[in-house]
Image (cartoon, rainbow, N blue to C red; front, side, top):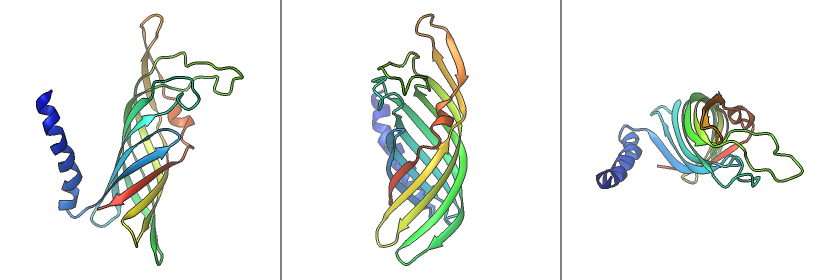
Length: 192
């Protein structure tokens, strides 16, 4: 474990700066949403027509409504294509969309969010594997290395958890992947 701890920062730095060596535009920044918070990295192709987006974030389902104290964690990847670009005097806007995948360890949707009394989540968290569909608007400020990226993401997939009472494994459709698709995400990015 000690060796891996010393190698991990080198791997992360190499992953971040290799796209720069190939002439790709790279951005790193903060992911913010009612879904959770985290870190995002975007790597655009040299012609700017494609982007690889990698996001590591927490999952706040049940946290903000005080139904649980256990946040989840998600890692998602999408490969987006830029299909509309407009440039103004001080900004550039790009509309992008694409698909990818997501894995994580999270809670899934349970009824009772709007109930009149406090109710904790009954089901245990579990692993997810989902496909993702992303639609976003990127705004580059030309006078600054900052970028804002607004997006929405749908993540239909599977949720695997254990039953707290029996210990049985339960495989179900990941409902939050669809129910939370309307929640916007904001990435505040720094361009290299």
